[in-house]
Length: 344
Image (cartoon, rainbow, N blue to C red; front, side, top):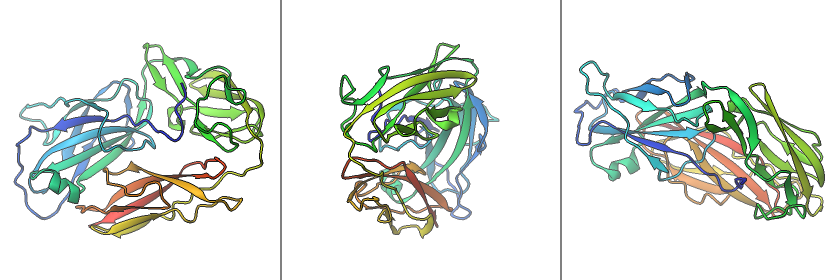
């Protein structure tokens, strides 16, 4: 079954670090919260146990840390889907805020490891402070890729050619959908391979029917038939795609989330998508989501001007947001991104 492009399905694993009630009595100067291990851009195996080591330098009343896994460009939710306790050790020579966590067995490509610190005092403090660090890891399965497949009907049909409605808006040129590419590996585990970071490449035999970007997002651009060829780790698979939608001419809109910028802690930050445009001059629908940094409360995510309150930070931290827009005829934009750096 294909996943609708407008309804992302975040996968988050949450870990508790350090026993509750453990209070670190630290000074007020030289604030820092850093993931010392693993280092950014490190490579690991799917399912591998890895050591995580934090440096909670001089953060007053820090009592625990929570860890989250996110796939690349994955929308964040206020609540995690799955929760497991991390294994922590009590050996004398263990580093402070250290322990062992397991990389998910189904992981492949880039993963974001987010560490979020919590102070003594509960939720009130969490609403004001963002104590976090994150690293991006490359995950490679140890097992060999046996086969590439697609979690969808074959051939994949849109519009009048479809036997059943898969999307809410299949009858429009410009609609974007995720191609659910999976890999079946020799260890018996099925892993998602849609994203470019997993090693997948794409080719559409008829780009007048379907365009497909490097992350497996398909855009319907005309009626007809095309063949999508997918390659990964020396394996190849093909999928026939049939498009029979209403063929009123319509150019896809462009999402523009504005330029990267820096803001002070405690300020109200407005995300501005008004530079997005529809070539035909029509109105747009907007969807903002957060894909980087610790989670913030994003207000009005379906408006051109979403906003959030910049949390207080101990050093400069970056929050990344994704923007998608849709025109009145149902055509989607490819996603665009903006980074907001929050300064102390």
